[in-house]
Length: 398
Image (cartoon, rainbow, N blue to C red; front, side, top):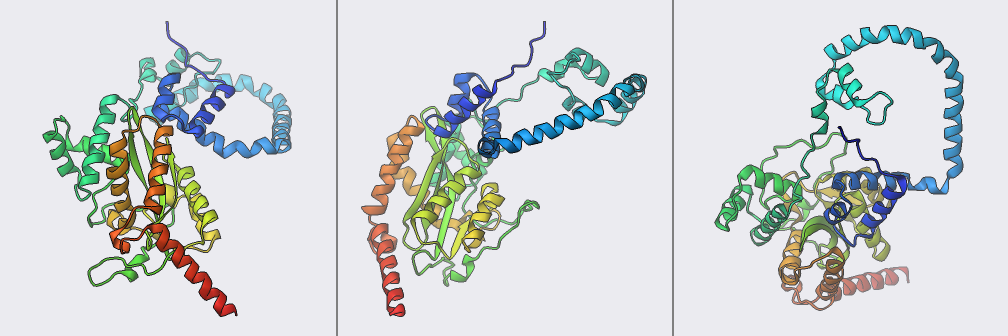
């Protein structure tokens, strides 16, 4: 006897989305607890964020459904008259469909909730019923996968110039039985690439506008980017944070000149809400920068993120493809964060990591001495620069 496809109520979906947004547990932990796929949680979260404004505009929704009902009522009589004709045409269309539509497209036509049984639909579309029940494996969802990701993260943090070949060699020395292609897939999943210039082998997403790298004009004769003042350039990125039974994503914005972390956020999903959240917080707390530098990841080329920068009249700079070294200041902070906090603390949950990393960033900004800024703290250098700028502005006005 075949099992029916499991459906979930709106209340159940809403409950799980709110739990995802609370970010007290990783996506995998939530999915495992409720015995659902992590992909479902991501889709429900996206649907929730796209439609949450409807809660405050119920009249528009009611009006829309009323209009649809009126159209359906008008068409009802004519549709009834066509039933006989459609019955005759069915056999003809079935033959044409099977001969002209691919197996993948026909498989996508199957509707589990349709009055016509799954068996009948498969027969009409010439599809083997067993092919419907194949389940794709959730990428990197097992404990062994998490262990591999953590090992890659540790190797990459220690040797950021390592590509997948060297990381694979190191993993094998460390006792992992893994191939280079699998390591390359894992690195892509984690969003990391080796920090060295590489030839451009990919094409930018045509749906997203590509912005040039604006920091080349600030390079010295040693090819180092030298930013002279606070709030001249902000930089941002996302990194992988290992947990005892999973992982999370960490986004931060850093002031290039003073090394101050302006805003940060830990999340169980890597999407545009993560990047726009830290950007909005930084702009609410500090004077806007002249230039905002990112990589070309989809979270940063998304229209929601770009529009915030455009609305604040901020110049947009993006690293060239395969050149994470263009954003070296944030990459160095990742190394500091992981070696001085994450790897030492062994956080168990997102909540625990959120509190611990928050304490470390407070220490990093206010008490940790930095050799690159003459052994001062980022807060000392940043606020001194901001105060000096305010004094100069007042003098000009006077």
